[in-house]
Image (tube, rainbow, N blue to C red; front, side):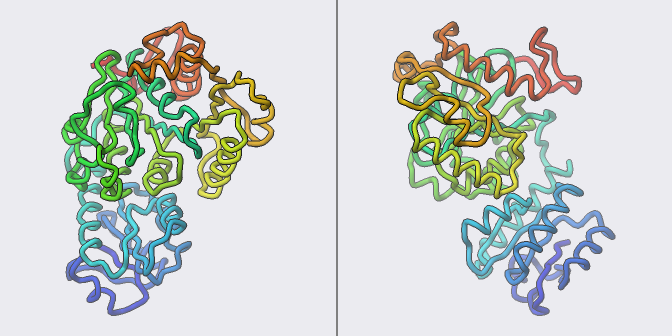
Length: 390
């Protein structure tokens, strides 16, 4: 059954098309909480547009911890980025325009299907407990995609089952950076929303044969970016983490709704900086934004790319400006753009290159060791996260 939390007694009739006639109407947060406690089979809460945003997010966050399979959909009279960010961060699955009954009906369908998956009553979402790692910079041209692809290729090459998702939906370069001809893209996942399973994920994956890395490319048409709702990204990443040891996400240099969705489910965020004032300024703003969104500081690591460039700034200056430590320094090298132009991953093409060594060290210590892999003997974690490469 669906719970509708709304002050208006006529709300059930208003949303009957989307919710059906058996929705339980409640007009206060305590009553909603009591109903959820009394019936653990409740699968969906729809929160009306006049409910205070903070109250709605408080309920969503509390229930996300207690019962993550519960779906929460938030209705708003007007959609804005601030409300969307706060809602997604708290655990709301979708935010829908209150007067769009068709969109609400679609959101309800997707949420119910996802709840069935998470409860084990629907199609399997895999048996692994993979980690989602989002690579982000608030400025373009800092080497973020090169970092993402090389990290992912290296992790795959050492035996971890790894997926790289290109979330720069307008201008993603992951596929061309690895000379891949994509079989599908993130756009193709939209048609499977609400019932995405392991087979669906594999249907849009392209293999990088040299390393064993799987890639889900960005759409070829930039216009498709607007056709990918943020909830599809959350569903994709959650299903993928059940199939992979690591799911890396390459992102555009801005806080899009898709990036916010990725942050919401990420276990680690890798922030890329360079030795130039605009990049440092933008990354400082990004860090402040993550703090505002409530993202864990322990789940971030800062990488200084081209750290030895002679441009008047030093790594210490960057740390002082960011008010945060740099975890890894990756040197500058002309071999990096050359490898990109040839469509090869430097960590495989020239593994002894100083840049390759720095990226491998970053992956070993900030990713593999962080998530429990024994680097000395390659032992798997006690609950079997790391499997052999396919």
